[in-house]
Each structure stands twice: as structure tokens, then as C-alpha cells.
Image (cartoon, rainbow, N blue to C red; front, side, top):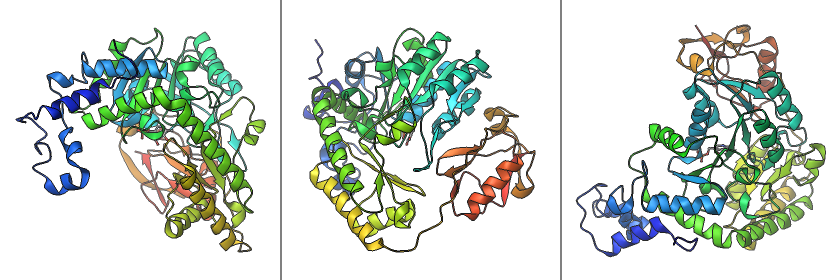
Length: 483
Ligand SMILES: Cc1ncc(COP(=O)(O)O)c(C=O)c1O
């Protein structure tokens, strides 16, 4: 009988190691003996369990042994009907979800601020994206979630769409009203696909936004490595209900999955699942308490504002993950980018990300009072050093209508392109994405028609010193358009 106490993959690796098996298989480093410098640094145990598919270790392509058992335990712990282990991050789970739901030409309803792995998956699948504009919070300059109203408007206009894609939560910890969105999509015969890259811990605490599986979503891709303690690149894809068959999902995963998965990554998923199943509530409680303490302390520092539940009053129906500390630094007269450099250079603190207005610090199951106090003290010292210094002029937050789609992203991707002077690109079809931070929403995507408003907005943002990404020409003088 399997129980959450067990770690089938990890145990199989330790058995192999303890039997002193002589290797005549790959990997060719042969338990680290071929690469002594690296082995000495990383440790013999790590090299000994760097194995790949063999009979007692099962196969990720068609699991029937220890991987199957570990996935069964993971499904139970995370509240899913099935779990699939991934060794190429949540990006590969997002790709599988979109390819499972959409064939060439099928519509998918998707927030405009979706991660680039979702846009890549739309290119791969040949789907037609119908973008939903997320709400913008003006003070923090960030994209919030999508409202029930926006989603139902999009569903009414596109009743033939196959799926609704939702981000739970955004990078900044904002959750859309997921249970209501799931109900709405299902009532309209659409699948619900959830990007849970920032939500692997949600299931384990009642004060966090509800997880995709609890909300009844059909599929969710979850970065176990980001917030549930496994190693970087290891994620899980969850399935619930009857809309997708596990066999079909597996066959889609197998299209692009490596045939040599790292067992170190797989074992780390196994052990992270055990840890969360057994101690998740306590660990997440501790992280929430530490983050709330830090939020309170940061908000007492003159010139800083750490986002809290007050933002939810402006955006009805949304939720917030309190372990994400989004710290607005604009009153200090510096950008978030500059603040991040100061924290790293002067105080040896590395935050998760920075944008023009904010820093984002993640508090997780690995933190303690001392790490969080170091962050608070560094912020306090930085604010003190900057007191009375000049204010900077912040760029406007772009909030343009979503442009008309002339070509499917896949067609645009495969079309011939040429550079064209950006200022004169009105009416051309863009061959690339242009994105401004904040708020991290694409201004234009491949296949969309460039308008005068888009040209004016991008030039204004450039002039104001905004961070503009995506265009091959970093000076933004030329944009690649479809020939
Ligand atoms: C919102 C969102 N979705 C998906 C991903 C991709 O996840 P992974 O890095 O596990 O592939 C990320 C990564 O940062 C993300 O922020």
C-alpha cells in the first residue's frame, strides 16, 4: 500500500546506489568518476543518483513502476485525478495543455499578460488567441487578473472557443476569481487550462487563493520548483475530470519530452511532494506569517509601499498570495531596477524581479526570521540613504486596445520577415512581440496589425526610459514585419 510517507523514485535511486552496481550504461561520467572536479564540488551522492531509464527506475514515456507510483501519490497530495512529472519546467506543461485543447485554427481565450511559454504554445499548436485584457493597478503599474465580466464578454463573442486559459496566480501573486471562471467556462463547454507556475503551494493553506484543482479546472501546470521545494526545472501537470484522457495528455507530452529525464529532478519532485503532503500546512503558515510581518515592517519605512490586501478592494473578486512582497519604490526617487541593484550590490540580497516601479521578493517555505529580517533591514537602510534625493519621472503605463489579428501567430512565425522603420510601420503586420515593463503586457504580438497609437505609445515609452523588450533591434528603430 502506497502512502504519503513513501518516496518511490528516491528509494529506487538509493537502492541502486547501495547495491554498488557497476555501470555499463549512460550517463558516461559513471557515477562522477569521469568528471572528478565537478563530482568533488557537487558531491558523490548527487553523481551516483544521476541515472537514467532502466528497468528498476521505470520510464517517463510510459510509466508502470516507481514513476507511476510517485505520480499517483502526487495526484493525491495536490488534489488531482492524475499527475504527470515534468523535467522541462511548467513551460512544457503549458505547451501540453494548449496542444491538448486546441488544434490548428481553434480559438483559445487567454489573458493578454500570459507568459511567453503560452504564446510559444499557441504558435506550436496553430491556435487562434482571443486575448482578454487584464485589469491594471495604476499605483503598482501591474496587470491584475481577469474579471468574470471580461471573461463572459469574451465567451459570448467567441462561443466556439475550445478553452479558457487562466493564470493562478500572476507573478505578483494576484488571483482571478477562479472557481467562478471555471464554472462559467464549463457551462459554455470550454476547457479550463491553468498556468500555476506561481501556485504549487496554494493547495496547502486555506488563506491562500484556491488552487486550480480545488477550483475544478481540467488541467493545471504547476512549478513545483518555484514554490514547493523541488529542483529547478521540475514541475507537474495535473488533470481532473473527464474532458481530457490521461493517455492523450501523455502522448502529447511524449511529443517533445526528453527520453533521458534527470532522475535527480524526478526524485526531487517525489521528496518535495512528501514534504508538502506531510508538513505543507505548517511550512506555508510559517511563510505567510513571515511575509505578513515583513509587509508590516516595510510599510512602516518612509518611501516604500508593500502591496497588501487593500489592492483587492479596488478589484472585486480577486485574491492575493501574501507570500509575494511587491514593494513599490517610486517614492524613493529610484526605479525598481536601480533598487534591485542596490540591494544586491550593497546588501547581498537578490530579489525575484524588479520593474520600473517595484521590487518583487518571494517568501517561501525555505525562509526564516533571519532571512526576512535581512531584507527588511536592507530596505530600511536603502530608504534612509535615499531620503530627500531627486524624484524620477516615471513612464506612463500603456493601456492600448488589443490590435487586430491579421495572421495566426503560427503563420506569422513561419512567414518571411524584413526589418522596417518602426516610425513608418503603420498598417504592417508585426513579425515580433513588443512588450513594455510595467505592466508586462505585450503591446503587439506576431501576426497583429501595427496602428498609429501603437507607434506613438512605444515611442513615448522609449522616450520615458521604459523597459521595452521583444524587438530584435534594441534601439527600436526597426521592427520586423511580414513581407
Ligand atoms: C506566469 C508564468 N508561467 C509560466 C512560467 C514558466 O515556468 P517554468 O520556468 O517552470 O517553465 C513562468 C516562469 O517564470 C511564469 O512566470
